[in-house]
Length: 105
Image (cartoon, rainbow, N blue to C red; front, side, top):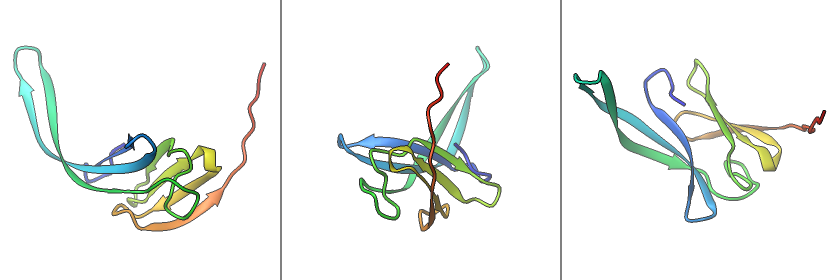
């Protein structure tokens, strides 16, 4: 997921159990004339998050990510039953609990 400045937000599993959000910035784009393809190069900026059920933590991993037009980052912590809101630099702002149910046909 990219924000309006081009930063790339990724959900990653590291060290077998700790789940983090990785933020990178686009440093260059190169193009291959023969097949009209492009390759982007990113520079690591920061990461945040850890395993757990506290503020800014993810219980068994973040599942989805979204960035709104103001640059706020929303991460779904499905196993924790919540959505967490962060600033684009990783500062935790709030958490909202949610409940869902599976529907089978």
